[in-house]
Length: 545
Image 1 (cartoon, rainbow, N blue to C red):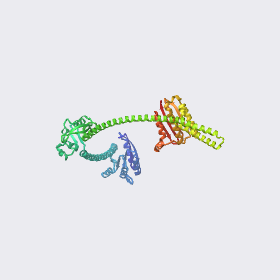
Image 2 (image 1 turned 45 degrees about the horizontal axis):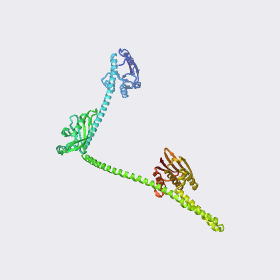
Image 3 (image 1 turned 30 degrees about the vertical axis):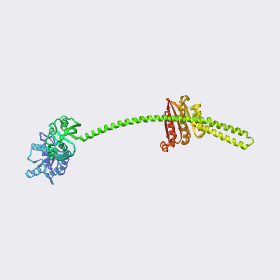
């Protein structure tokens, strides 16, 4: 108990206050601080404020009595000890005070200073112990309630786990019964079988499988040594997994079946570990791969046969390809000779026309002019001769044009560069709405003789195609020597064309393109054409010399 105790006396008699005050002042072991109120209301208010350590309550309170105040204070939650004082020392009042919640009962005139001091001290200690007991009781009740809830939850969890275990057991039984795969579960280290699939039971044929048919597949009293001999690869895989924690993946072994036949199987095995990582057992699975082996063998034979056929066919194709290359080379050679023969024939025809038809036409024109000059007396006849002379001039010009188209004599006399200049001027005189821009960046001596006529024919065909089909306003011609290659480019700013659409129109529509390509490739060149709608067309040929 504390050395300083605050005491409140609730009594309507001043003499009692003075008596109690003197007695508390004489206490030797404890220092008391005494306060005093005289009325029921003041006492109840002071008790509600809980500012004192102990209350001394008189039985007689005027119109009220101390029992009423005691009951009201206790019901209001007063936790401090209340000592009941009365001048009527009888058992009934004592009993009522104690039942109402008083900590002690003292009869006025009968207690001394030590008794009062001891009563106050014991009341405070008793009240403190009582409060501690209440708290402990409340804590104990709360703990019991929590433990009860935990027990109920644990019981429910155990029931749930038991139900789940039953479900898992049923699932395991169903899997072992119906999955067509050999499955065995063993414990460690004695290798006792914990579970065996129906497929495995039927494979080992213990009593023909009849004994185990009605027995749970997870309740078999046997060891793996009873199922397979020590030489079995499956037994070795199970032992390695259960005793050494090793994993076996897709290992091929041979098992003895019911009919003592060797059955090829694919085995997988692994250890079963607890939460600490310790090996507690092993599980192994296997399946019959005899059919797979048979199919693999058939596939191997078929693959070997196919490879043989492919080799034979490859050899045949190689021979055919060689023959095709030879034929293609012969065809290219023949086409090149045909082009050369064609150019030679054109040259011969042009020379024959010049030597025969040209000379004849010139002679006829000379005779007509002489005859017209001598017919001065007959104007009508003379005019007819003059008309015939003019027609003869047109025939001579047309024959010269034909001879030029067949083989321009400029090419033989002055070379390709002069011929290109002449052709561009003639082209602009015919197609007056098209401008030709040429850029020639090589010397005449740098162009091989056999390429001159090819270059001219490609330029002739490309520019005529542009004039006929592209609606171009400008044609650019570029002939140069780049990196040891003669490069020819003919570009226009026309409408362009769709190459697929041109091909679909038939041979007539693509004859010009085909002719240029054949001339270029047969002369050893690389031919390319690029056309963009509404942008224009570019034809490129590259000869390596």
